[in-house]
Length: 604
Image (cartoon, rainbow, N blue to C red; front, side, top):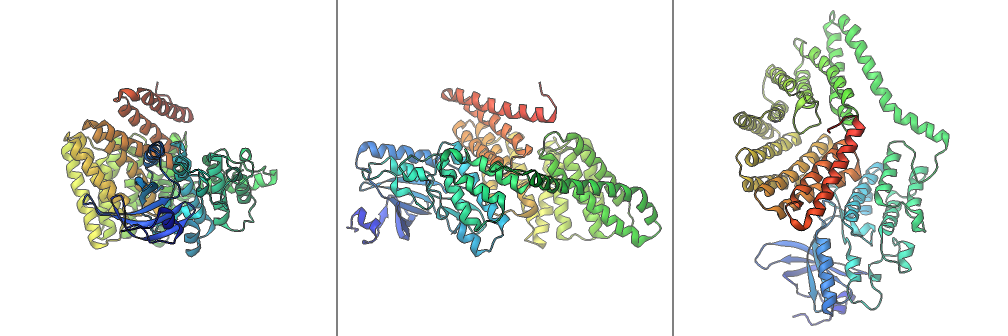
């Protein structure tokens, strides 16, 4: 049995306690100003779980102190965000406060970046992940109060997790007569006002992030980034960024070659930034002009020479692919682009028609043509995507994709995967239950065939999760079994989050995550479990907030309105939350108003 005192455990001159609450202590992870961190394993027979146990300096010797501690613990326990390590449990051991938290295996953000020899852009991407998590907490009225590299961990998948959120607040709430909260400060990263005793605030968290950014990027010679760091770490809180979104906005402005708010930009530098911004747009314009010239002149001549024609067809394929994928997505992310997207889709469709008419085309060109028809069907009228509302045209384009795939001999992994995606998009154009089931089954078979040939195909793996989501949707709405739908959709969400989605699959995976969260909320709502539905709708809202903090695109603003609508519906079922319901509905309405104003439309 452990006989040493609490202070002895923390001071490193006694063995660790054998147990804390329902957790068996299995080792020491570290010691610091807050106390010590041990590895714990839950072994109470309820379920197995490895956690990080924090035994904190300070005491909870009075009933009032313990009550305040437990209230604060519950507040922090509601911080459910992919970028924040959760607080799972907590209490008092002989008067010493303790917390059980997610056990994060990884390295600090600086150690990870240095070990991987990351370039500047990759380091800034990690930093922006950390900022997004801080934004989420601030919107939930929780201050971190001890931001430093060792509290920003990066796991093996490159995902950032912030530790110790709000623990300084927990310590301050205890009966610590020496210096409340002082143990939570790391002076190297603490804002000057914190060292002098001022309570933690949004401004002090901005300062901590600025200090982390300075250490993460190293010696800075670039004027804009140096100005951003200096503005975030200004000694006077009133001279810093007012909040973390403002810091993120300047980082985005720097990346987009726009003037930043942290310093005046001389006219000649504004000119340079302008031309850098326009370079991409100018290149797109040049490509469209070149494509028109190709389609009207060069391809007429190319018919006389097969080899030249084939070369030109590959050029058109590349143009069509560019227009239907990255360029269309950029337009969809901006307000007021419906007409431009329609024109882009029409032009890309003409190029695809020309490609489909090519006799004896190589199989890789035919596969890309089929992908083009499927993508064009998506942007024309597939539900759940940013589309032009032309469903019948979308169905005809999917038929053309199927017909093009039928001309390819064999059934390799890439072809099978594409057949699966054609069926996924077709499902989004259907309302018939029987046909929807058939299409889902076909998609599952094709994705399974692709993975049987090549288990590494990320697109086929994500496609299977889309099929599972669709089946959960049909279980909810067509079969009217909301409780079963909730279980199915939660299992799919778990499988989605268990993988790291990179490259071209990052965007659709994130969109699928939001849809799953919202549909799980719907399922619980219609199963008449309003509190559970509210939990899932809040998680969907948190995901939208994180995406808007990282990259405020029109697509995610639209989802913000959707998320607020869902929240308001559940809140309205709770009499005490009617005011919150109206506030959520108002936020959603304001988001939609802003969208329609920007696009020049009206829904009144």
